[in-house]
Length: 316
Image 1 (cartoon, one colour):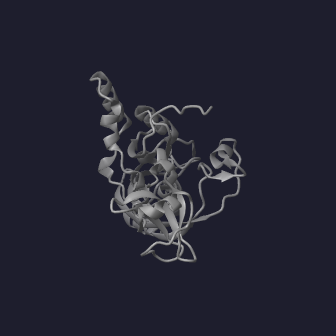
Image 2 (cartoon, helix red, strand yellow):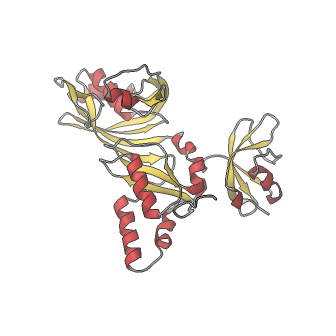
Image 3 (tube, rainbow, N blue to C red):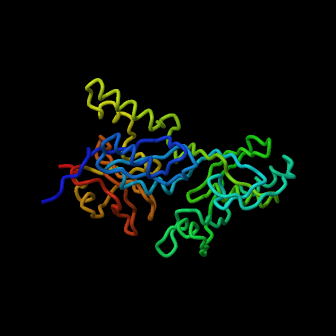
């Protein structure tokens, strides 16, 4: 006999304003409990020090969370010059202190060097894996392991403030970019060392900043609903963005209800107005344009499903 899953079978994405001092997984668990959701997952961890946008996917939306991991991010960061730490942020131990002899012109010239596509070697204090273990696990044991450089793109980096040996910047970067590593590299470029003392993620993909909610706000809504004998879902669920929000930037291929069942069963189908071979697409059905999954255009011009919604979404 199958064990009944605890929680509500809800679908969608909530934009949580992660607080500082706790992990992304702790944030996920708190929000999952507030919504009493059966299934939840986050999309791209933030360091405990960091705050800001953490999209949390519920139910069917977890199938498409990978597309958010692959999306661009925006950050605001404050770096302290003159001190280098073992984690490149203020949660680590200071390993080197140097005098700061930097003027604004020198700083702006060094910052400009980060714009564009470059190779970045991830920090040992990252969640990337080496031989099945996360790098930060090795780092905590004092073990350094080889890391491959990765291509990153810094679309923009702007200096907002430079005073009292603090540098405040705003960045728009590609997936997999470590802001801590940029700050550490900047400090070495300037000859004085640097580390992150504040980091806030202000954007993931094209999600609206103003739709973010804090854990405290969600808890207050839950408590208020219970106090007034109101079903919590009626006040919490309207905060959810649609399940297909994670793939909203993909081109749409709309198919007839008659062939949707084949897609939902994992079979390629012939569809009209498809883009070029190899392109990922968002699949919708009928005039209602109901989202049912993500597919790719194969070499024969067929629409081949990659990730689809659960069977209860099938069309008759």
